[in-house]
Image (cartoon, rainbow, N blue to C red; front, side, top):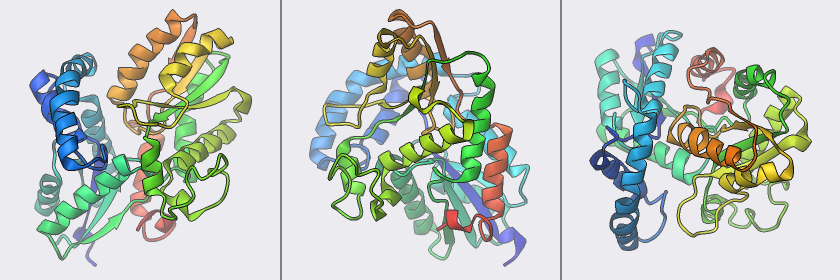
Length: 350
């Protein structure tokens, strides 16, 4: 195969085109109407999303987006674009991006590669999600593969698997955290991951009888672990804690950004942050490893509302470690994944 026959598409969540209510409403409709995000019958989803949730949330979300918006645009999109540029600097293979919701679309990403690759035969698709979840990794993967295949049936696709336990990814995370450990003697380390309805975990269980079958399901080895978000975030936490030699007694795992009244994975981050000062935890480090790029959930939900809640309830120090973003170690690690997908990193690719 010729060296100019491959291309790489990095795919992330996406953002509104702007922070005005109209743009945010359009984005929320696309996002929440995804059957893998709100997995209820279509008619009922239409009523709830378009009739209740979006009209109520759009103005509030628009205000939050306005707070984090940069001169270049949405932080998540800007960071993803810059990340792609820096990865491209390490590779001869053309790199482009697509978003699950909003732009650029998979079709636009494909056109970009076709314009840059003389004889495009193979695309490496890299979802920027360390952990498997039907509402993030799975929907992004299916969205882009279905669209690309509809336009190019002959194209070969290789997929980056969730990399939650890859040693190089863990090393990149650890390196991003180290500088903040010298600033304070923290009372606790809060690993806050994006929340999921428990129903999603059960749906993703390929064995149909493991997840939440008992209280120790995340400790009992099973094929279900391959698609179990809760197990995977626990492994990421464990490996980072070991890599940094953190006191495991100070480590807390929680889940943020829940929506609706379904049963979600607990404990909830907002509740933990509110209660921690009363439990003697005054100096808190917060990490959000479910996100590789800073976004609304980290920059506004954690850095603004989370910090305010913690300090108002008696906290003294609140430090949220930035996501990997475009850190040199992460760019190097991801570039190595792409360069070595046929040899030393073969296990990470489908």
